[in-house]
Image (tube, rainbow, N blue to C red):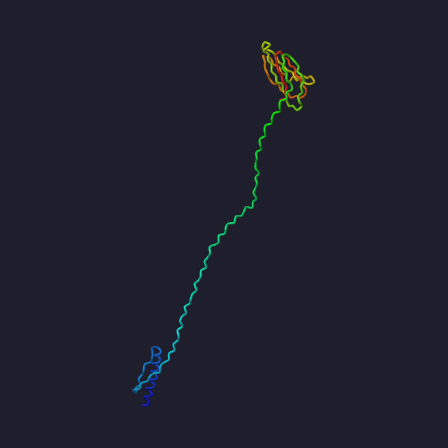
Length: 201
């Protein structure tokens, strides 16, 4: 009898051990009735609950994207040229010079007559480059035909026969030029009416 009780107890211990193991996985251990009509309640198994650590939500700070400001508008700087201005002299055409006025004619001798005559002396200035003898004659009063001749003598009485005047006809006129300076006189030979003048032009 004693051996059977010990066997039952041993079996009960084994069953309780198995039940404890199952209770930890599935729930509380059921009551096992012993063979003698007595019931044995297994001691409750203490289960330790491990608190579950809740994940703390991580607040992600919004990332602020830097706003790129538009570049400042820089006013263009105008640099004055460093080259000094070149002054171009104005080309002024010279004013046309007025034509030199001819020197007024200088009359040296004026004489009119008929027939032959030697004129008074006259002086040609030393600065005169040229002088002339202007003459005219008319033979209409002598039948229409006559002669007219002029000879020039210097102060020494020498005849400038290289520039003599000699005309024959009813009349005529002309001018004879000379380039000598000094004192002169004219000798006229004619049978007609004549007029003569010596001058510096």
